[in-house]
Length: 605
Image (tube, rainbow, N blue to C red; front, side, top):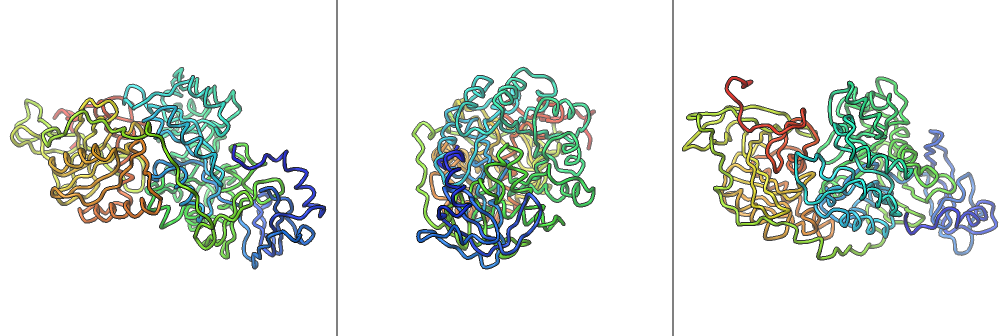
């Protein structure tokens, strides 16, 4: 797992410290113990730590203090277990695992359960292993879920790699694999697809947890088939009925608050208004932008938000600690401040606003007053993880033209991907667009610009063009990104073809990233040289560049909250309703390709 000694190796020392036969390494005195097992807050509590684990938690730890013991006065502050992120993707922060850990530790996150399916789609099993090994060498508890769906929807997209049953079976033997990453191919599970059932069986046979992803509003027989297929949790709910249905079926309902996904508020009503038992509810982030991590927080932000929705503070903390640990079978390792568990804790003076004033992980002070107490050296990735953007040619403005159907003279009805602010799903819209000189035109006045997916794994030079609405761009501009969940080709969204070509070619030059051009000028660039997904720079630098990108998008008229995150999901062909892939537009309500143009007789406008 991590470099922390196993409990069995430290048990004798823990007993000796608890009984006063041996001094503790660290004693924290005079705190208010947030006990997530009993739901109590117990004042006047001392904690003794040995071998990176809690040895004693009670009213007086003076018997455990020796000459070499470090004593920390909690000053009547709350003793909160270190926070756990139950489901997230490091790559969405645009930084390495190491940099992600550096960014979130000051916010009180001490455990993460990461699904590296982004790098898996680019580099395959080798990429997953790189992040697995990196996670093991960090002072936080970072567990890895083996990606289950690479590509996410076979037949609807082509990724840079493919992972199957044999790869999952191999990964289950690795020391830091905690389970299977989100099973996104939900029609495959409910339809008894052999690969999906095979990867789930390999995980269950290894005694590990199967992550879920049921991104459909249909709670009928397909949902019941999915649950019967084995996934044990789900973070794709957006409505209160989604949360209720999952918990009633024995799944953990994971409520996410990422940079752009605001799904806690509607679903937490299952507890606050419908009275469901909160023990099967878990908080997570799913996707967090680097700017969010540095400026706003991580799991502390999610807990605060849940409390603001009417949840009791202790209940919200349980959803980010012990509930998560129990779900992954780690309740004897983490998730609470109790003897034998890893000594992960937060000192906070306010349980509602949750300021994180001191953070300990595995018995070591990691951060105080929002700053790391010591630096963590940056990670180094091999050359094989870089230079992964292969365009095959220099792209021209003409590559982004959309010829009108032969019969169209003045206008056509086109399908349009509709962005929904603060949610992962999109809408399948239709719009009547003008035709000029045989080419279909965008409609900036009605917020319809162009989207293109550029193949970047095999260098085919392929470009798929379509339309998107919801970004609000009101000037000549284009943004390109090699972060394009989950196949991670290149997505370009723009209001003119010249800037689209400039943006795409620029990312080919730098080896991947996110770039915004306006009127032929580069306004912002975040270089992501590792698999076209992650930066080699420190998190603070990446956050600064990402913030510049946000400002540049606003200058171009885009006021959507964390619009970059919305941009990056437009190719995710496992979340309804309409997406783009390297094979064309995909109707994710029927999981089938669909045409860009609508016959007049079938038009809905």
